[in-house]
Length: 599
Image 1 (cartoon, rainbow, N blue to C red):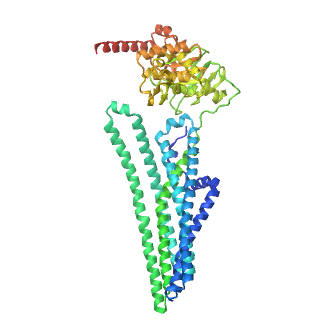
Image 2 (cartoon, rainbow, N blue to C red):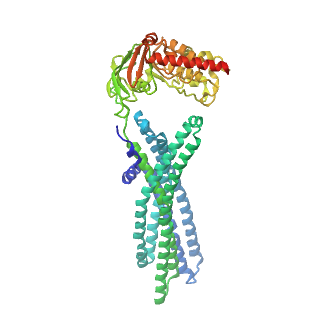
Image 3 (cartoon, rainbow, N blue to C red):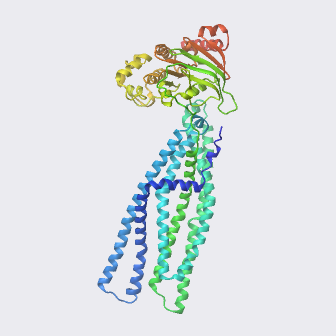
């Protein structure tokens, strides 16, 4: 099985940039309009100092103040700045609108990519890291399009325009000012080289922090039960400190190579310009307007350079985040392949023929397992923890493919069953029932929204849930809070079973459905199982053996192999593992009853 360690390494930056540009292509019309507005706004800003230079050299120094030309000059200057403000507003609006649309597409694509992965991926890759890539990393990509792209394009346009104006005023001095560009390029290259390493480390530490937080919240009952709060706080603090140190590396790099270095270059360039005009003044007159315009342009040139350098850190974060997202999107680990035939529905029989399976390719979880269950029968699977009970469910649901052997539905191999038929005709009820806020009716028809109230009532009658629902204040329209806190564990489980039965599956699988319910609720679920046997085939993974006493066949697993097989009575007579497990459970139940009487 392929290692997932490479997923921690972002995609190469060239490939990341190429894919980010690919997402821009469908929006090229809006981007073109934004760029044109950007160019127009930038040109208007650049033209301002030229008008001031013209006023100083041709009017102020000459003391020539004709009214109409000056009004026209002032009006044109005002028009340039107003038009610049309007065009910059709309280019910013269009850029942001396009950026949000692109990020929405990326999020949809990465989520779709994750949804297409098989269960083997989710068993090996941390859920918190997946969430971090879909949320945090895509949010960082959004900053690339909204903030960085517009700033880069605008400031590059501005710098080109400034140099054009400088060459118009003084080609010789403009050439001297161009000398700072190789130094700037060197700064950017050094920053790019080291920041990519630091930001990749920082993003990975953030994923680790999210993963630790996700695990802690999900496992809070266990943490509090065993008083592990201090240990979890210490672990989280270590993860947080590692993330802090990774951030500090980037901050030190930013503090050294971004604004301070550019400010130093700006001062050096200003000294060169003033020195040039000072030298010229010793040989002849100096045009004050040109001096003003040059100093003004020099200041304006280094401000966009500063903005570009400041955005470099954001750009680097975005590229690293994009590389992490696209690396995940490139990962291929689909569910087991199917070669579906034209099956319209399952009949209800199931068989395992010499099935063996291993999750990691080394440790066998199931070894040469064979059994069969006919339509309308009840098969129960028992065994100690780690014996392979839940793996049987994973294989039936085609979350994994067996390494050896064949699984059949109605004599057809599992690979031949279409996905739609498998999901519709094989129902699964897990140990942890999910109840959401809303009415009882809406909870039951969660998977069958088109079902009417009559069908819901019929399903509830089959499972026995109708008995407690009718006692609720508003019956099927009774409103439940989040997670159904007003219901007992058994009532939640009956609702979960009813929800699945409403879909009318041909085969119903119950995974430890009575493991966390009380004795009374267990009795309700037992009665529900008896009622459902008339309508569907049952496969029950049992922790409490008392719930499977009436099963047609019970198989007992140990270390992935079938150790015993038979009915409840025949297995008790064998005096083997099943009989020992059953006796222990009866003793525990008796001790619990005695303890309850004493208290």
